[in-house]
Amino acid sequence: MNPYPDDRESTPTTGTQQEGPGRLIVLEGERIGRYVALERDVTLIGRAEDCNLRLSNPHLSRHHAEVLRRGEDLFVRDLGSSNGTRVNGRPVESEPMRIELGDKIHLGRNLLLQLAFHDPIEEQLLQRQRLETLGRLSAGVAHDFNNMLGAITSNLNFLQSLPSDVDLGDVDVKESLSDVLDAAHRAAELSRRLVTYARGDVENAETVPLGQVVETVARLVRRTFGRHIDVVIELDGELWVEADPLDLHQVLMNLCLNARDAMPGGGLLTLEAWHEAASDLGASVIVKVTDNGHGIPERTLRRIFEPFFSTKGKRGFGVGLSTCQDIIQRLGGIIDVDSEVGKGTSFTVRLPATTRRRRRISTVQPTNSLAGGGLSVLVIDDEDVVRRALTRVLTQAGHEVTLAAGADEGIATYTRAERPDLVLLDVEMPKISGDAALALLLDIDPDARVVMISGHRDPAREEALRSQGARGFLRKPWQAEELLRVLNDVRWDVEDSSDGSNPDSDRRTKF
Image (tube, rainbow, N blue to C red):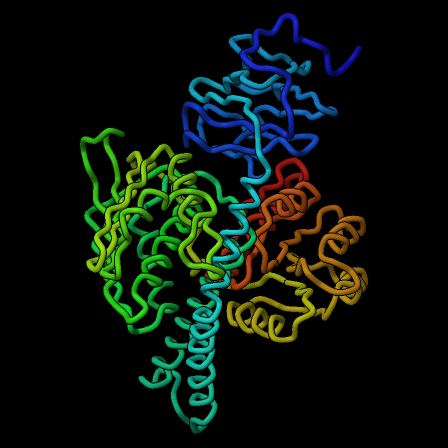
């Protein structure tokens, strides 16, 4: 049987055979305007982390449906979902159904997608604008990193110079350690955000506290714009929207950069956000970015959202504000501008408001339940400083630690020593990668409890490693509490396996 039957005659369509890769756009349900380009042989849709179009709609299955590309043709197939898939009203069975431009795909009860033409130039413009923004921020970011590293090294130098009889409870010691932790956290947060921003990684659509995004952007702006620009934020209540945090960050950061350029001699930048009960969009969240710079002439104001239109000469590509408008429109919102020469400019963004979603209560037991220690842990990492840091935290909690400086040494240690309760395995290592080392460890012992450690956020790779047998992930820079929770989860797993029951009949993974 042909696995890709031609349903063209029996499937009503509203378009013609597509040209180019095509894309699926969300028309109804969660995050209207969100889309995914159908450039892969298989595009997976559902709630799981490895889905190419991932939505948190509760009526979707983890792997709900997939779109298959075969040459110039596209097919959709239901993956045994609980609430079904329909194309133009017709149910999709396990056999793939051909889809064409204009076709509407219902997933579950209230999620509607449409197949539309996709222009790859649009993605290139978005990435170019991200890199332009990142380049404009780079000098300030380097300055801020140096400030944080300076705070860390100066405090550590101070601690090293203290007499050996100084108590750890001393006020100066505690304040110095607190400053070191704060600077390290700020550096890690900035690094993660910039890498995500530069790569253009799409975060999962979620219910976002807009005020938190505004505060994040304001912190970054204060650190990078210089002291000649005062930054003020005014937030009114809890403000929730359905969006990708990266999209909101990109829009606000771009508007702030334009405001900075309008105030070369310094000035006041104000970020405001509030809730509006009734508007053209219904209940809305309003964000306003205002500067008191040189303002925009009327003839320029009429063209300000045009792609490639710029008044900055070689310094500008003319894609920033057009990108902002595109993002806001995809979010179902509106962006307006008001300006007066010599007095300043205000950009106003209106987005559909949503309500806060309940989060599931964590069942992880508190860290202090680890007071007794007692687990054996093999740490495999090629960085000396990482191995030492892990050892200090683990031994302080009462666990026995064995160290290996690379995958080959770690595998040799695992084979000749008594099997540890847990292996902490770095993903990025020379010679033998963490992926390959995991496979070798599981070949030696299929029941090995291996937790991967990584400095990158890569959901697809994480999902693949979980499928391969990894019990969980610890992302760098990790906090001591996160590490000890991993140990706590393994303690439950060990106890379940040693209570006299068959350890393979109920393997509990808590990550």
